[in-house]
Amino acid sequence: MNELPQQLANGLILGAMYGLIAIGYTMVYGIVQLINFAHGEIFMVGGFGALTVFLWLPDGFSLLTAIPLMIIGGIIVSVAVGTAAERFAYRPLRGAPRLAPLITAIGLSILLQQAVWKWYPEAKKDRTFPQFSGDPVHIFGADIQRGDFFLILAAPLCMLALAYYVNKTRTGRGMQATAQDPDTAKLMGINTDRIIVMAFAIGAAFAAIAAVGYGLHNGQVGFKMGFIMGLKAFTAAVLGGIGNIYGAMLGGIVLGVAEALATGYMADVPGMEQFGGGAWKDVWAFALLILVLLLRPQGLLGERVADRA
View 1 (cartoon, rainbow, N blue to C red):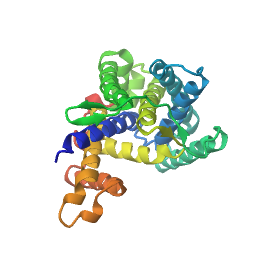
View 2 (view 1 turned 180 degrees about the vertical axis):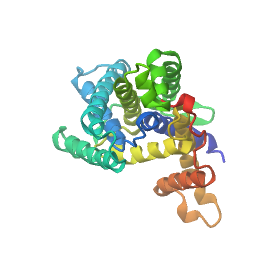
View 3 (view 1 turned 135 degrees about the vertical axis):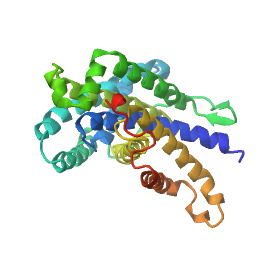
View 4 (view 1 turned 90 degrees about the horizontal axis):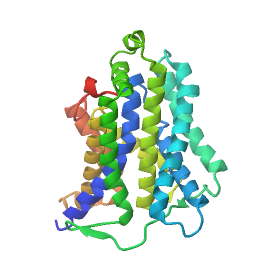
């Protein structure tokens, strides 16, 4: 049990990453009831956008100074792809049967993967992502890699900014109105098309920030990284209550911690020795989702209409 602080720290870092990506799923679903399965690839292109910015910088440029520029580069790429997907792939299908945009999202996901694989230089294998040098920092019995502090700081700051934006700004209140009743919102003078684009853009920006954290955590980015991370983030969104922005982050944290604890301790449970270790972490993550949906189908926080965005 002396590894518990380390496993909890690992889970929180992983959960913060899931939560940031999950917000994109939940915002889009909250407004247009679309499960954007291409969101994992929007996360992926954000990582490559950030890497591209770093490669453009001169040799010897401080990584700490480069991080803000990499975030901006990643956000620009992710938001451009996300809003283009909304405009050219999803908007023409509004009013169509739900299966049509769902299949379009899956197709777009594959298209983005193949585009990066084909045209990004040397992307057929994972590309090395810059790392902070130095030993891990020992805090409360856990060793935290220096790059992981990015996610520890970014997740709460992003949530605070999003909560303020949704609850205190005119556009945020427009998002809530559109989520509750898009037809009435349009009659009240709200530009629902603009609101929907904003939801895609904010979700994509958060995904890009998560992608920078992913690169700093794993030391590499690859064209396949969006698939499993997208599935895990979607799981987190459903776990927390899809459509609820706070639930998305809570679901991410719960999923990350559960995954880390299962990886670290399942092998110690009598009769479960063969189910421990990292190879089974995805199984336990989805087993947790099934369990929660059986006991509480609306997710941990449910779908709070007032907070939907």
